[in-house]
Image (cartoon, rainbow, N blue to C red; front, side):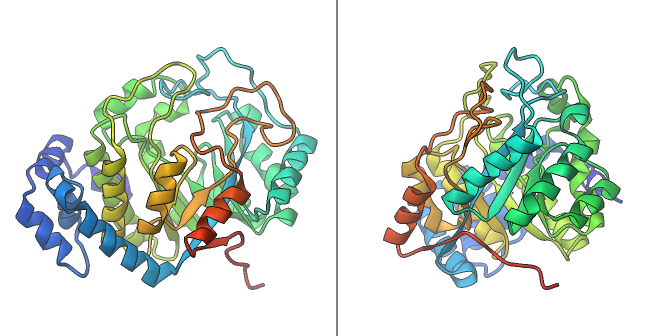
Length: 368
């Protein structure tokens, strides 16, 4: 049994129709619940909920502060490699794009890490393209071994692996894995991922199942907003989360909200999601689940992040570079996507303090 079995019970077009048919009464019913169902969630992400965004935001803010206080965890991505065997049409790292390919050496990894430590970070997210030979399991194992003495938490956003491989990475210090399905529209998935291992929809879909079986501390989910109807993709993300929390209750969970950004290849979103609509999604997730961690990256503008973070967000990246060697090595690698918020980590911390929020650089240590 895996989430693919659950997903097969649902029809994309029917789900989409259900969401768009929600009424004012459905939204008010959802807002009056102390605990929202997945059916209520359809109402909260529907067009009918747009006039109630302020009410949603106020309730979301109160629930977030009740559970997490006035704190925001800060993290930073470290891109190790932009080599990739996939051909994702929306990604700057696609092997079809004629860009400089770089995979950091052990010395370069450590140099990047020391530059990041000077910024104040103790939580590191390792990112690579998906390439078994250049940046596969062995490479990641060694990278974590090098970095673990310097950081309290190491997370990865890399190619999907087996349960056994995740367990081995956990032994050397892996804390969390972020894996985005990009879209849950199975029929159209292939058109966005025409080549490479990522073209296997089911294998990628079942990656969180393998993580849960491995006993990973935290699993990060998300869909790429702009590929398909975002309301439908967001609902299927919530369905996936609900399944995982019931099945692998020992793990914690995080949701991210990546909107398509300009990158090499020039792919254009099929459906735009506005700032107000993205805020609606963030608030809807908080009303659905008071325990979930919600993350907002530097894909978003400073203005949007400054106004939205207190309405449901618990984690933010800062000072991000989206190319290998971006912090200290300074290779000729092209960034994966354009960063909108160019502020330094210190500037983001100062913004949080001005709003009476605390920047959390280090979340926790394991009791040994």
